[in-house]
Length: 321
Image 1 (tube, rainbow, N blue to C red):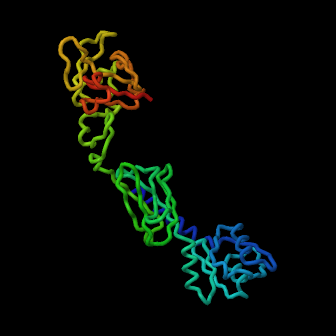
Image 2 (tube, rainbow, N blue to C red; image 1 turned 60 degrees about the horizontal axis):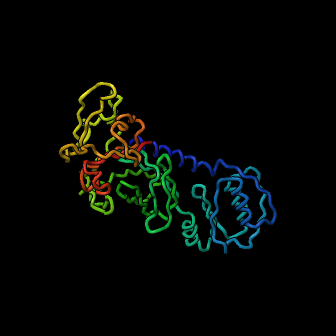
Image 3 (cartoon, rainbow, N blue to C red; image 1 turned 30 degrees about the vertical axis):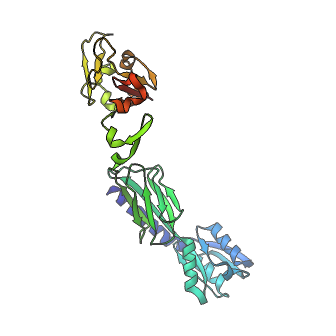
């Protein structure tokens, strides 16, 4: 709601500024025998006006003009008084056309001009989204939202359809219609489980391995302890962790992934990889949660196939910042 009100207010301010610009802007032009094409370029350099015309309508036409601090209407009335040309001002765009074929030339000029659309894209929580792809359906015309989630694009007509695409969100289509300010809310994509994910040397559907791989939010690893292994208990499904001593230097927590899979005196600890380097439990215990970028647990044969027998007791994958 807040974003919509801000955009609406900005649109009203923009419309007001556009409506008064043609009356407020004063031009000074003094030329004798100047071609219309050159006259239009001179006016564009002095102002924010843009001219649209058919080349054959103005070719070879020369005019005399002598105005001082005059409005655009005064300039055009004097310049076109001895020709068969007419003009039409729309916002800051000026269409020049032959009076005998006015309607056809108006349509051509409008097609060249296009419609400028401004807007913003946010998610369903109201957060603005940068990098969203904005494309006119059926054409190569497109842009993307900036760091503030805002975009500007020129479309051919009111019937144009804008397509909004962003990874992890549903594609949305919006008909331009009479709107010049558009606020779009993208919804998160909830059908990712049918996608294919890479597992070791093959591929499987994500729904078949989603319980085999668990990514832990690093915020959950912050505990009132200098030992990272003590943060595992109760934070990860399938991980059994317990601490047998609080004595400094001997306070590591014992932890197993989906129970103990090796009997006797064999190794029961999971494989620990920090930035793809195998480390010990002691090394892992001294890592600080603020230095960790991602923390994942690989639980069974599907997830640990790449590591062979070394991954029989599960794998702890840590990537540091």
